[in-house]
Length: 306
Image (cartoon, rainbow, N blue to C red; front, side):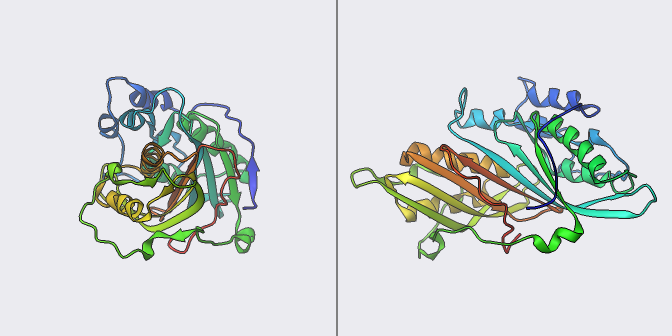
């Protein structure tokens, strides 16, 4: 995606950041405790002037502890956020618009609660800025502080919109399988692989991934791509497993890490990559990518459902 970009270089912390992140890292606080103070699922006043304190970080480690992920992570990757409702005023008061892409590393200590992200972006709506670089500088500083690690930003301006492309995840479609399903919570024990046959390398795709917001219970819809090399994974069991997220409550990033960890443990591939493209909510889509081997990062191509 072409646009105005700035390097991965944080400069300052947003106001009240350490108060919020203190909640996130409080060892006595579970994920549920953290979210009690977040704006998610609550009525919110829409602030239209720059307010970086609206960003609400949540520690990644709480959910990783549930998966037994301590110490060195079995994966690396990024979370790709696309924000389609970005607007501010120039110094003469004229509205400006753009599409923002934020890439946050998976080893950053925090995710950012998505409603707080939306409220933060809305706080620029009546904020006057000298130019796009001034906007990017504020975004870079505040978001790097909230995620707890440098983020990469790309701002795509209206004259560049026609350059944006769409695409679908490639791979063998699991959804073609005519299976019976009667369980709608994750059951990693149903995953099967053929450990006696020669290893294979294949890419599998499903559009049937649905989970629910950890707080509000609202549905989150996604397409997911699984690339692996190793014992051949039984496709029917994998599809049942993915459909099992249908009544499961977790954030996007947490679901993808659960899928990655369960497949790695139960199917034991030598190489594994899991990439999900979630549909948009509140002008934002979040697209987590996790892998355990070197390779090219996937393109940030908007899918038809996004």
